[in-house]
Image (tube, protein in one colour):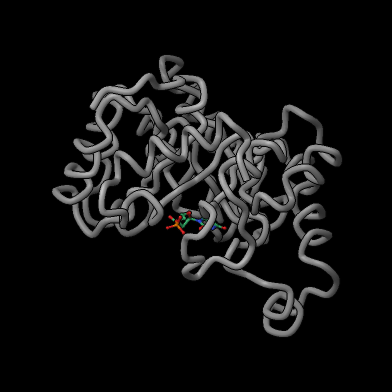
Length: 248
Ligand SMILES: O=c1ccn([C@@H]2O[C@H](COP(=O)(O)O)[C@@H](O)[C@H]2O)c(=O)[nH]1
């Protein structure tokens, strides 16, 4: 079945390739062929398939978000960011909880890689605020951060912006507040996307694809609603349609 794909919207859809190996990830890519979405490579796939798989995705023409969520001392994160920049990814991330010195160090790692090889692409560097699986109770009582999740997310977003990064990972519930606090150009990359009626799984702070786009999210990250669907291609096209309609 052929369908007309809105390319601009498709580029705002990040498909989470959460697979144990490159063979299964490749199978999903084949099913989504012709949809110019971003591909998100997380730790499960990267630890198995490594940089070669990132190269393969780039050679197929995909934009790649390497979701390794670095959180370490500044010197180590700087070196990690330097190595990641050399892979030619389009976006990667760190944890905002690592603090401003760690986030600035990530930016220095990127700059040093670009200075050594100006032909490299400058990746977007973003920071995870509060994981979308975290709810208010967990954040207050286990992690020990008082107040509302939205306030904590916005505080981290401001810290991230001040450290010179390009944006944050947050839930779609916080995107409008982040834009208001950090500016319209500050990127909001939002997992926690669930089409109406689908299981939340381990996600706590969710919105539908249409609500997320209406709420100002720049990118939506979708894994299981596509990858665990009986027909992943049809699921992805339905999500694109909902993004286009702003449908609840
Ligand atoms: O706060 C965060 C940060 C990252 N993720 C990642 O996004 C996808 C979501 O997958 P679903 O199957 O759609 O739940 C997954 O790769 C996470 O590692 C997140 O969910 N929340």
